[in-house]
Length: 79
Image (spheres, rainbow, N blue to C red):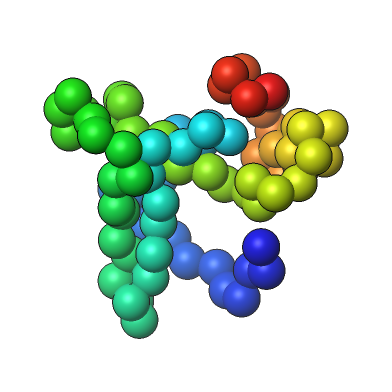
C-alpha cells in the first residue's frame, strides 16, 4: 500500500484497526467514505474496524509497522 498524501478526518479517526477488517476506507477527492465489507449487526462505531496498514505484509512486518507508526500492539485474531 503506497501512501500518496495525508489528511485529518476527525470523526472517522475513532475507527479502530484490525488485520481482519469489516470495512474499508475510500476517497473521492476530499470526501472519505467507509464501506462495510461484512454484514454488521448494527452501525455502532465500536464494532467497525478498518486496516491501517497493508494486509498483504507478513505477520511480523504488520506488528512492527503498527508499533513503529501507530504505537500499539494489535490483538486481532490474525495477529
